[in-house]
Length: 468
Image (cartoon, rainbow, N blue to C red; front, top):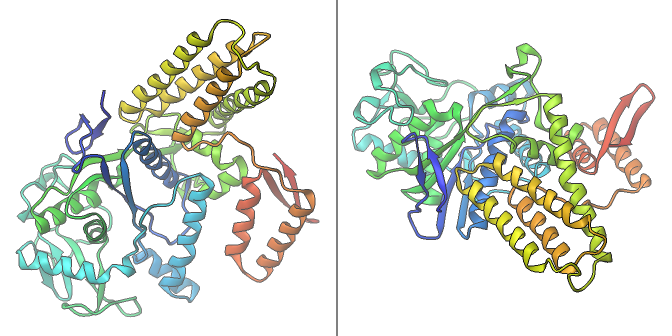
């Protein structure tokens, strides 16, 4: 059976067939870096990192691009509030984003382009759309004519007349049609801007991804992915402008992960349930957060609560305990299988691997794949109940756990603990960094300690720490 993926474009599960045999060109939308990412942002990062890992496991050569939006109204607002520049804000939170992903064991992208570094390509793209009649200039702004693209709405499966202007689409008298969206925005006083054929200005939101995908992956890509909140208008608009510019199908497969709720409610600051990813990593550890995110199918909504996280913790601990037990028994095992079970155990191990692959082939079903992991644990424990076991068989179970958890981005081996004196020195360095308002270094130290299982507690007497 080949890999099957549910394509948002067709609303069907389809066999995965790449443009170039053995190679995958994959683009995943990254964050707008005006703040730290919340826990919902971490879900697409973990899900599509797992897809990338699995495609590599299945023998594909993957080129993974994830953009950074470093020019945006929110960035401009934060920069003005802080009395700094948009670039300084973007640099700070791009570093924070990458630190947060490392703590979740998300592999860095092969290419991480930023808007500020892609301005010439964006301008060229907009010029091409104007020349082809798909865009028009209006008082320094440039808009895309949605009515000229007959297939507009094919991703969100809504006819043009029924669509409403989505997020970041400003409705004003400059437009020919309310759904026309900005490709280029004329500069306002005090905003960051670049020179263009239409005057000083900056890119609209949607154009950046089309320009970056074209620059780094070419006119056609295999996979474009992100959260379901991006289907309309962002991904819908990407399709329109890209396919009008190149005359080719932009992406073969559109994948979208479901949203994350907190205690069965939508996450929002007004409800007081807005959770930053780094705070949860510090409290629970990045591996548990990652494991929790993979317990549900990526296309379904997922609910986040302390009770569900506790259940996930018990499951992850069960897998780690089995791994540690296998490591212990390996030292005591016999060179020859003593029970006449060599062939039987090899068969069981081979079947478990094939079952894992079957589940992952089925639209990246990590939930069922983790069930297979628990079956690996069960079979390994059954074998280890015998008084004498074979070294080859114990090693095979251990290797299988490492192999399959590695596909999911989970780490079973425990890193060496920090000495108490090392922890005290890092806490003192963090305290000095906070006094010097070097918050980037302060956060870096906090994340390092959290990854090592060290919980910090601020008290009136100073910072105290404990091991989880």
